[in-house]
Length: 404
Image 1 (tube, rainbow, N blue to C red):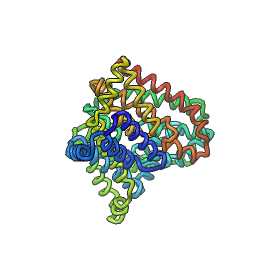
Image 2 (tube, one colour):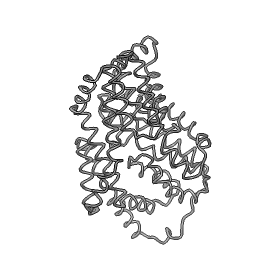
Image 3 (cartoon, rainbow, N blue to C red):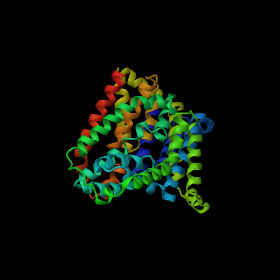
Image 4 (cartoon, rainbow, N blue to C red):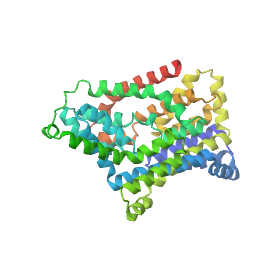
């Protein structure tokens, strides 16, 4: 067995290397957890922690919820309902600025890695009406896609944060509503405020009430699986995993899902990769605790006499930025910070937002890379808008933490 800090550095380095080599997040987190365990507590204790994780109610809820949410996401794409959803929304809203703000967020409800690429073509079509350049297109698509997640109750990252910190999902969400409102305002003023007014198409002038009614029906029809899932979680307090599976069932019924489409999704690796990431995050957290790493680093932070807000702000943000993963940043940070912080909705929210903002600005963030590539925009130019947006969002997050 070796020094816990050295072992932690080795495991973290291996995690970063695997991600750099484009190994999936789930595999990377799990390998890092096993490596840390083998180097610190040995084979037997590592597998004891593994089986303990698989028997943990919160871990199982997270794992099954992630699997169901990924199924819902894949089914939306496979059945074409995601296209019906976006097209009906475009028909309901006449203002191009509103569409540019809402469409990426609606597509963002589908938690797919690199999912900003899904909304990019629709954003491009509307952005042309406002004569936005490629930098603004990239920024708008990326920023507004990610404004929804801090208050989206079916977000895997929110579920993970609540599970790891022992807080309730909605207690975190309530604190983040003003932050999300601020992020939307920031995105509007930086990305859309000076854009020229949208042009009203001739088609829209002649659509009439009937067309609007049809669009509304199409929107409610295609949005109903997500709406049912959110209603069960938010209004009835149903377990998020159960609610997500109900959403999958509703989608299967309304889309008349073919068995071949279901088997195609289940044969794909992506759904299992993200599910493995949920398990890997919880497993890494438990290994970090059992290995003593969290205790050692926690005592170092205590001796440094650092302000609680700074401790919650910087480590998660830096880790998420470096590894390009908010889940990784949170999974590593929680057991360490638990030694010096009693997690409440207040501290859990700051932890979440710190990791989330660090991830948004990471050059390894897949949505950022793919969106920039789609619009043929150099990454350096996107940061002209991203950096001030992230700084303002961080300031707002701190103010909410201090004042509410």
